[in-house]
Every structure is written in structure tokens, then in C-alpha cells.
Length: 303
Image 1: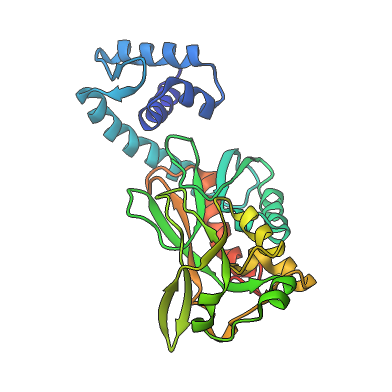
Image 2: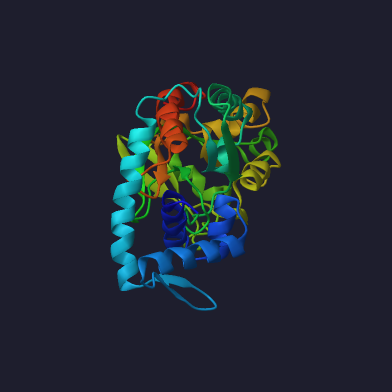
């Protein structure tokens, strides 16, 4: 195996901490990964990894080697991609993860434009609201809505998402429509339980320019965004969701926006990725594309 390929494999194994995950991310067999690492260690005359049945970790020598490998791969990536951002020869696998709210036809239509612009890129799309381990799961970048927990990930703001408080007409006909926040106490809501810390996420409202949080009396509590919206459509109670996630239901009349004078401030949308160094060209191309394309993904609800 060539030295450059060995270094790329070494870096991937160091990041993922698993021979199996490294093999899957590079689309090669696990025995090959083991053999190539053994050959690299033999050629260098040092042991790069400590291996246990559960985990693979870098030795002290491996950590020093990893620092230099990052620098080398970063320089090579910059040099080989500096003249090509058109997509004509750009290739490789791109694995992204988006929240359920963005799994709408408008976003997918725009995503199709990216694959048309970069036909050599093989895209793997994940859809989830949970906190993903980008390095451990081999994900190149993830799109997320809302405030982000502190982490070692790079977070690049790309826009804002409008939030909407709404309910089904049948719910409003049975329980009446609240016209101010004080009246919310008498109403039922669909609560969303965060998988990250197992707590109910509050609604937010803008009152004279200030944010006011509110946790409703639950008609039902759910842990998945699509089920959350469907429970609102099914009249379990009031919901508050990104406008892009409920747009079709507002247009059809299945949901009605309420408390519009108290509509919360838009929530930030960020693109997360593990490192600024040696970004693969296809990942860098997607980041640049999404930053430029985001405001037009759904102009009514994204900005």
C-alpha cells in the first residue's frame, strides 16, 4: 500500500478508534485495515496503536505521528483541490445528517441540485434529531437547529429557521383558541422529550422583544419530530415547530397558526463538522454550496 494511502487509513483509524468502523468508512475489508496498519508500523519501527477487544487508541508515538499526518493530509487536500471547485472531477463519498424538520420536498429538491452539480460525489443521507457522534459514526457534517451544546466540533452558522405555534382546527373548535400566553395554561400541548438530556423542551415566545419560555400541560409526549407534528395534526394539542416542518399542513388547513403576535425569534441553523483541517474536497464543496443555497431552500420559513 502506498504511503499516502497508509497515512489516510491511519488517520481514519485514529479518529474512529475502531478497525471495523475505519474499514466501513473507507469501503475496504477489515483484514486489509489490520494488514496495512501492521505494515505501516513495521516500516516506521514503532507501535502506533494500543489494541483491546473494545477499543483502539493511539500510543504516544502514534499521537505524535497523527499530528504530522494531519498537517500533511491537510496540505495535500488543499493542493489537489485548489483548482477544482466546479464539480467536474470532484468525487468520493459524502455522508451528511439532517434534522427531521428538513426532510421535506423543498430541501430534497435542492439537495438533488447539489448531486447534479457534483455528479461524482456519492451521498449518504441520514435523518435524525438525536445528537450524533460525527467521528464515531463516520459522518462528514450535520445540520442542526437551535442552540448547540459545547463540544469540540466546528459549528458554522448558515441561517435562521422561523418557528410557528399551531394547532388542528378540531382541537381549536373543542378547546377555543388562546389569544395570549396566560390562556395557554388551560390548554394541552404536545410535548417533545429531548433524547440528549431526557427533558421536555420548552416552547418559546417573544414578549415585547424578550424571550419567554413555557412548558405546556401535555396531551401526549413524544421523542421524534415527525410524530410530534402528526400528533398536532391529530388534535392531541398545540405544537410549536419549525415552519418548514409544518408548511404543508398550514397550507392545507390541517394546522392553523395561533399566537402569531408572540411568534418566537427564529432559531439558528448550524452546520457541524469535526475539524477545520484536511476537509475532504467534497465536504468543503457541500459546505460552500449549502451556505450559498440555504436562504432559498424555503424562503417562507428560512432566512
